[in-house]
Image (cartoon, rainbow, N blue to C red; front, side, top):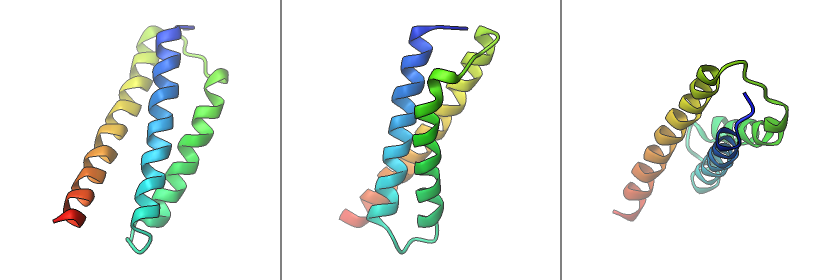
Length: 89
């Protein structure tokens, strides 16, 4: 599947994942998960750079990949919002 819309979403969401994990790590370096967040940031940055090499055999496979990224992005953004709310309270 070579779909521009899928490709663009993968780029956008992987950049957001890398950036959010990086912010989490930078803003809370003493948190138990800070090292994991660093690793996840690097993983999603590498993923974003490799999107040009991704090939999906079916639209369903592409949709599953989009769903994977969307789910992880929603989770980490909610976690960031939770921690941000705690720090400002």
